[in-house]
Length: 177
Image 1 (cartoon, helix red, strand yellow):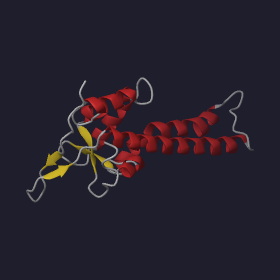
Image 2 (cartoon, helix red, strand yellow):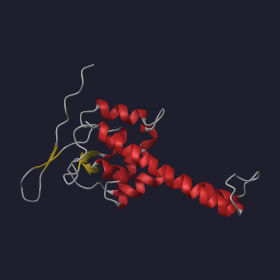
Image 3 (cartoon, one colour):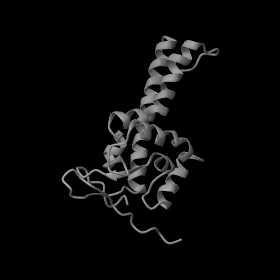
């Protein structure tokens, strides 16, 4: 199958009446952001687990108890699971369509009109991470970004969003495409 032609820029109207062109981010920039965010999540959840387990066990022991109680689950297990599952949702809402990984890759989430997505759109695109993550290591999402014209994953299709390069951070453009 021949490769898809380069995706066009997202062209949006500006307040001045002059069209603004936002270059659409490709699979490479998305993958870089995903890998960075994945590692940040892992560090955060392991740091929480290690700290909470040591405090719960009262010493340098991180092993779960033989008969875990509700306190173990609430204090030690639930917070890392929440960090892992809510990382993207919370940070994309708080950072207006960015995460630390997206920021490092020089990309951000926008609507098809070039605006910052609503909370509902950000939640929707992140709910679809469950599908994009199948079967392993985000395979469906990565394949979707390679096969769609605007390099969007299923979550972006559902939410009406896409990733564009930040004009202020174009350092990573080029080799990642």
